[in-house]
Amino acid sequence: MKVGFGRVDITPRAGVELCGFGPYLCRRSIGIRDKLWARAAAFRDGGRTLVIISCDLIGLPRRMTERVWEEIGREAGLPSEAVMVHCTHTHSGPSTGCYIGWGEADAPYLEILPGRIARAAIAAVANLTEAQLFYAEAPCEGIGYNREYDRQPALEEALRDDWRPAKPELTDTICHVVSARSGGRLLGFLSSFGCHPVVCCQATRYIHGDFVGVATNLLESENPGATGLFLQGALGDVNTCVVHKPEEEAMRAMDVIAARYAAAVRRGLNAGRPLNVSPMACVLKETAFSRRRADAADLRRLLAEKEAVLRATGASDGDREIRMAAVHAAALRRMLSTLEGGGTLEPPTFLQGFRLGELTMLATPFEVFQAIKNDVRSRAGSPLTLVLSATNDVQMYAADRTAIARGGYASDFAQTIGGYMPLADPHGELAEKLLDMYRLLHA
Image (tube, rainbow, N blue to C red):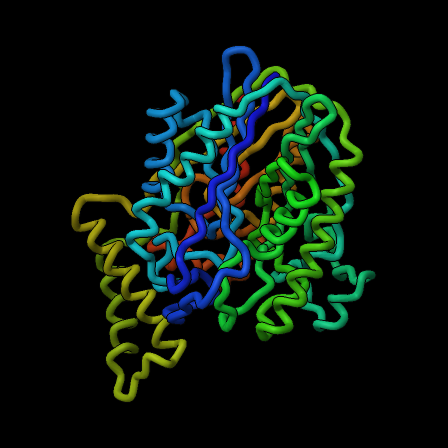
């Protein structure tokens, strides 16, 4: 087969607002710790070409992904189903207009961003060369804990090399590594692991790709000329072992956790076995997910409740409750406008699947919980099945059945940040739709 890699700098200028950690934080960047990249890998076998792009961004809304697809289609002749636009989900990159109140988007940056991302893919196609793929699974422990079902360790405890979560079975413990070599030379690699790549906190204001970006940069520096892509797995309920700490502690911890992840990928690069890559296949499905029922009267009632909070005597924009109410109010007004315009509160989004012979990648726009990933992998016919988050669109959390029944941020509130009603049955629906896609890829 042929494999090619491309990389384009997508770092914004200092001063743009960063995305993540809370509503209306005015979290403007003050400098660039590490550049952000759009990295692409192209694969060609016979007459079919597939491209994966990994962006050091929190996510890309559907409208921007479609612009990327259009440009790649025009310049490289590839259909949208053959191009996967993935994001690492860094919380120390610019707002991309995905979330209400979670950072103000910078219009000039967003206008040129799709073109920059597309150029990485176009370069990867132009760089296609004869190569062989290798695959490895490497132990990857001491990175994260399940924030829904486990406790966060103390800082010094987490930074010990022997730290492990109390419930490792509720996290990822394996790093998947695909490497491409030509004539004994490493052309590039893909690594996949599921964990929120967030070590910093709302007080940190430097631009960087979080621990996965730091780790990928380190591995590229060790392998001059090679390009590395990180593919985010089921991250919805898994945090890094250090998160929301003061800046000095966070930056120290980020380098420690990045070194742990880089060590796992390094083991995978050194232990890969040849990967059978035939046949190659792809599928892109536009689909909608069931959401909790609400009509215009319900939305107006909820909006009135939030407006009462916002109009209360003594309300202060420094109060987190007030800022949260502003997010709710903006989302409810958006939903009301959609209904009054004849639209639906169950907007369609994309699911996408790639097959490279033995390896199957099932990509979603959600922040997928571990239990959903485990369900899909156990029911799929191939052990080499990856479930990816943050791809082609932003649809917030897909929580498992236990979390939905219990309620909370991921099941009840997070969808509002994107302007959506909460999902009705994300575990059941997403698992079935991904397995349907798996069957199409393996038909």
